[in-house]
Image (cartoon, rainbow, N blue to C red; front, side, top):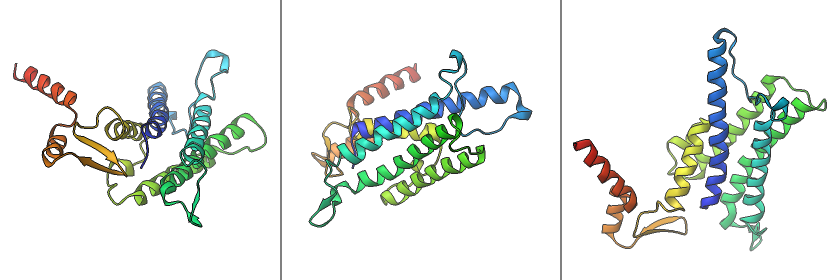
Length: 218
């Protein structure tokens, strides 16, 4: 089903790039609304141009590292079992396909912007980026019959936050007491634990809600 690190890493990448896109777009729009246009990537100003392509490096390198984790580390190179594709690692292969598209986008954009080997117009780079997000959309749409909401969108920042929420809730410290993740299923000790988890979640979160309710009453 996944892991804490497997959600935090891509979640961090989406979140950082998404926040940077929002900031850059707002600054450019406020600076001159009439000439504003959407950009597939945003250069980092200052530092004598040394960090200009930081966003593209972050996308390409980050996607490549996560791709290696999904394809090589998580699968332990056991792609085949009993003569067919190993069903235990189909999710890893699906994730790898999505990450490969973002790696290709970052690499092609760097080659286009920094070298003369592959000069592409902005529209072509937008098409490649849109293809990567389309692959991600199809992955989440067919990944599970229970995926119905936020993950079907293409908002980078919200996608990163969703990855974080999944990581902390399913694989991290926010898993409700009395429940655990086993074989891609959430199980609880008893029906009471399941009801408590659905209503309150983790005990620390319940304490925070209680404190907030007390402040609201005051």
